[in-house]
Length: 324
Image 1 (cartoon, one colour):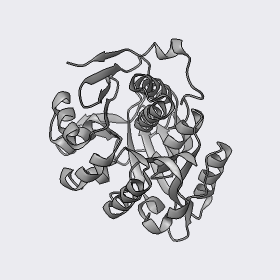
Image 2 (image 1 turned 180 degrees about the vertical axis):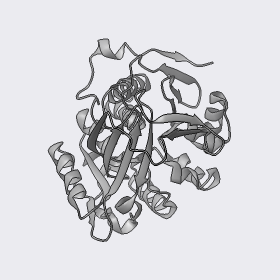
Image 3 (image 1 turned 120 degrees about the horizontal axis):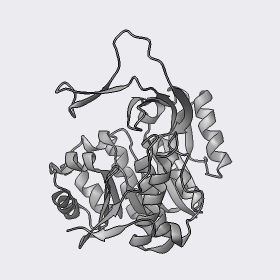
């Protein structure tokens, strides 16, 4: 019996770092901000870095680092990047027995444009990860206590199948949906959110789901949908946790970010690990802040993660208070 099966994307990532990537404010961009460079120019890169990524593999690394037995369910191409993903997971003793090799589609690929301040924009080719279906699941072999579900490229039918299977087998679900899932809207997602033991979004995603801007109103709206632990992360500010009764705020570590890619995966998977290991939300929240605070100090979405359970003195570095 596994402790955890992570479900979602597996990608090859390249990080391109340049001081010539500039923020430009314009209503032409959905969020009012664009990461831009000169048209037709040859842009100098200060550095570049290659790694594997994707929500399923990133979160699996945290679970494995913290001592849990974990496997990944994902879809990769029959190419050099797919084989690399299989290799690095196996080296981490993460089971790849449920990782499907797709002979028709290429492995998903992300190009991450990183500014010196650590913020980034990601160009995504979803490839094999977007051609994920219930046929890729060996349902009878999925013996685990938990599912950690990341983005499935908005595949609602597959999500419904996974949640129904989990309910039948009494598997707890931690869910960190992506942008494609959120586009489906609150009404379609509500039954799935209701079944989630842990529901995790960043503030921008939470605003999109609820139509609210104020964090208290956001969590009040999510609490009406989800009876479990509800997490909303807010970048360098910190993170909010609601248990349905109170809202707790954990301040982010005061560190200089190198790259924010993978922070959400690091936070959610570490919180879930803390709940599994100690059934203690305070411990879980501290673990999550330390894990995400570590990953943003390194390039890539897996470097900087906690390599083992932290000592008490490190846990006490995280400041938590009731949010009013």
